[in-house]
Image (cartoon, rainbow, N blue to C red):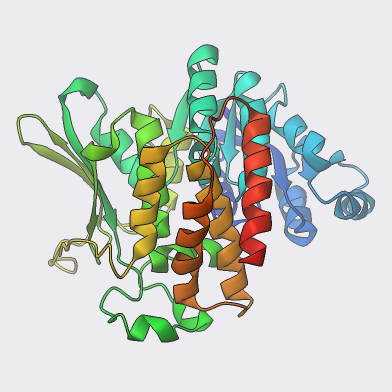
Length: 378
């Protein structure tokens, strides 16, 4: 029996995780849930799954939820999130909180010896070295939930990592893959949120439109699989049927395919190393008879190049880039800046950043605060 805690249970990954828990109720038990502030959804989830512990980062909201749920234990703040992450009865933590907020409870879960289902990009973007070193020290499993990294993980099952020639991460290309440079100057918020394939939260949807999400995934793949950046490529695949590929030194390739739905990679992480019946019908090869592939345009979509640059320089730059990008995306969503301003302002900020070594969690947080402050003023 997998006894899970979900950090970020009210987000899209968290809700999909709960769908799988319903589907595999004899195999998965939800012991703890946590969110930043959405207590309406948390209340619904608590009444359905009766978790042992509930955490709300917003302390006022936590007090309100405790009044609504007098027979449940509700804890607050970062200490509350860490309590969920380290709960004794839990053997796996799904890390699905967005932003650097999710890094500290993820580290707490690893320290407590919990296996991690990782959907929090920031944990590896900002603190990849810290996370992977701690995973090795504690001997826990770090199981990717992002569809692209789950695909690579599955392709590498039973394979010798030294035989990897390259990892190939696929990208849908977002809604603007065919736009000219001139058209990209007039992108509206509604257009950026209209993703052609995936249904995600607003921040990651905008990242998909700028291709920043692929840049972040490149950095994640580097940490997850120990592969150098020059062996990680991105290819645009609009149909999103092939989720990623691995090419080996003998020039053979293994791809993981399936419907573009997060339920499959989440379930694989939850049931690993087993495969259990899923919720989808047989794949329709006739309906999906055309698969296309294109090279990404690093000129029109500067964020992808910026992510590669940040990863190569390392240190504090990837975390700085990630935090600054998050602020700029929210400024775009608030209609304070244009879509093209996201990459332009980010590039200027990164050029001015003094790269330092990341040696501790405190380094990550200090760097994150600086990036957010500077991006808010850019």
